[in-house]
Length: 308
Figure 1 (cartoon, rainbow, N blue to C red):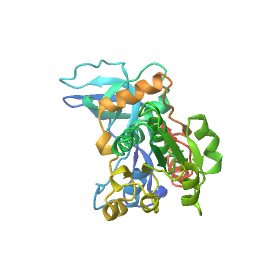
Figure 2 (cartoon, rainbow, N blue to C red):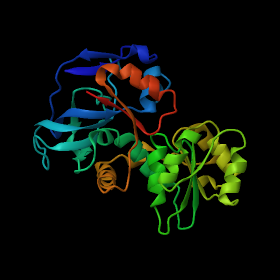
Figure 3 (cartoon, rainbow, N blue to C red):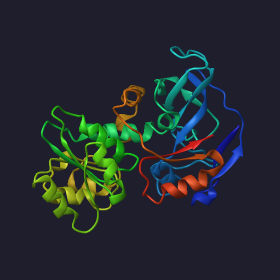
Figure 4 (cartoon, helix red, strand yellow):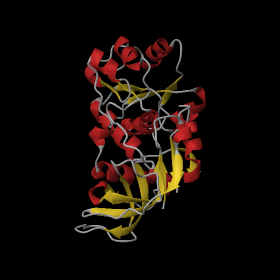
């Protein structure tokens, strides 16, 4: 079968699609033929070696966590699934950017009718991260929340989840480029452009009251939130861990939301039309370098997906 591999740390040029041995599901596992697999900024950081102290690579390394596909084979002791089932899931083995992947059955959930393959395959990392970040800032009725990179892979889901986190709904301010403002408005989010003067624009839009902040981009947004009067315990960053330590902000992200139960809930929301996973582009597996080149520009709306 074909799978993405890299033999050393580096840029997109180290990525190769090669023939590897077909995986065999062990006890408690299912072999899934991948229909779609999302790509994520963290994977690029691991490949470049920027995360080697926290998450070192063992070469040759595969990559990828997100996946959706069809169960082709079951290992021993798997219940609740059958060959032919359409599933959404995740793997912690850096292995989903491939035609086939052996996945722990406890990391899978059924794909509801109405959830497109691309959205299903891109759901786990961004979805679980957004879910955990929204929960971390403890939204209450009448709150005003700001989200940085509000149209990105995580931000686009966080703003939607935040909008329905309480009744009545909180106000959500989305920091994004002008070309994403219309999309944000369509989803009940009040857009504001990033860049010089942002603090003043947020103060004006929020009426001087900002209760919570989710940072999905880094680059000073934690400090900005503090300067805008947000209490550190109601700031969550998935990127700027140094600033979180400095100011006492939270860092709840994917690990805090990583479960098949959260994945199932997010999938149900998509199936009901209550959550959209914007898909910026899809690429065949052979164009994995092109896919990451687009991702690393950090200006896509929503997710980029590989289709084996």
